[in-house]
Image (cartoon, rainbow, N blue to C red):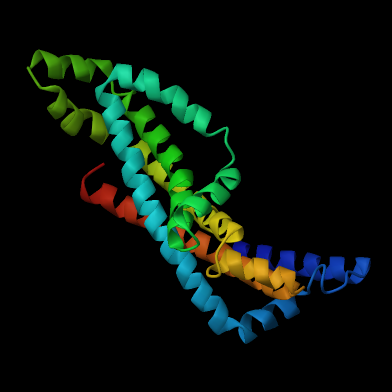
Amino acid sequence: MRTVLALIVTVLVLWQGVIWLAGMPPFLLPSPGAVAEALWLNRAEIARHAGFTLAEVMLGFLLGSVLGAGLAIAMGFSERLTGVLRPILTFSQTIPVFALAPILTLWLGFGMAPKIAVTVLIVFFPVASAFLDGLSRTPQAALDLAQVMGASRGRIMRHLRIPAALPQLATGLRLAAVYAPIGAVIGEWVGGARGLGALMIHANGRMKTDLVFAALLVLSVMTVIFARLVAMALARAWRRYGV
């Protein structure tokens, strides 16, 4: 805790020092005090926009995680399907999500749907990739023993391969929890009037840089808390099921 506090104080001191030494105008780099004031004066508006962003993050994370884990299990059942879909998944990561956001907005409108879709796309790959990697690393000796004992592919998947791959799934989910808010904000930047991303765009257009920094601070804190809650939930689930 002391280390975190010391780091925060150091960052604030360096921030204020840069402003003093470089003579940065407030519209380029507001002071920590100005950001704190903007955060307090606009707390109701920021909280309202943060609520929309949080809803998009949670829904996108849930859908992306379920779809990613489901596809990994399906690919785990079929080597042929894995051979077909793995290159497609890899290729999909070469397309910037930011480039897809306007298209999704055009297709789905300016509501929450395109923001959730962008979040799903960002969450989907790390979950599917990590879980599939875990499923493919089940000890061969355990697989051979299960087959000798006459276990079906479904029972092997359920009782052997999935439990063995849960640590890798947890890693993918932790990464996805950090990436999910990025997807929501990207969608809000492209189109929409609600959410922290939209608030930052509107504030930037009005040269209210202090409000931009305040919204960014709230987004960062939200991301840290969300990622921490996901990690805690995973740790609790793993202890419950003896993983």
